[in-house]
Image (tube, rainbow, N blue to C red):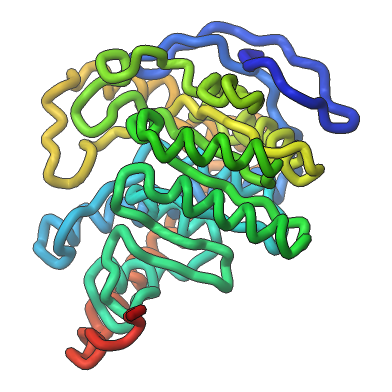
Length: 355
């Protein structure tokens, strides 16, 4: 297991499992091979959620191409295992905050697909009443605090949410997602310092999809071991295979328990890969089609879990096809709702404004 030196061990912390060197995109690194146990129902749930995210994002891409989604639209295709594995470690009362590649996080938080799609298309039925769009959706009920368009801005905000959990003594933990590109932002390190100083229940999740916009992490970062970025503050970190939902869950359970037990923050770097460009306007010419196809063929998180479901005789081909139809129906209804919902009244410009 590749880890930076921890400051304090949580009770009954598991021994480091065997590790191996794997390749994910342009990065080769030692990654933990530990996988969390899961019941048959859990495996089905993880597969269904990842599939829902994939199908939802595919439809969102289609709607964007039709001109029905304005502004920017960043798709999560390929990274589904990260958020589903992390979410599996949370409890009611925990909170989540992320960047602009956020639709998958919303769906993993059990936000309604119709409400998310309606917000993407700027309709009244959306989670932010059609005023936030792709990058700015919230659901206090689900513990989801955005969706943020400024690179790295969610990190100090999430640190503040973690502070609120500690101040209220409610036992909650805040998951704070950001990409490897945002890891070089100064506000990230200010947040690390505060979180460690006050021992906040924060888990920082670096979704390392190999490319910050159009630049490889190797070209943009002097150190690409992002899980070690908290070492100057004494924050432990771990690197995990972000293309394996059960590996992510295993690492997430450890990280969340560490933070929840009063030990302070933890950093998880999930090595993952995005199949599409940085946003819908990005043709992604900075990498080869062969590179993308190799990851799809060998490491796709949904295909891997599908094979496991068949191998363990959890579901057969017929039931998997039924599940796929069920998910597609949800996405079709979400798209229909997004078009049937009216546009917000112009008077909404003056609501929800803090002066």
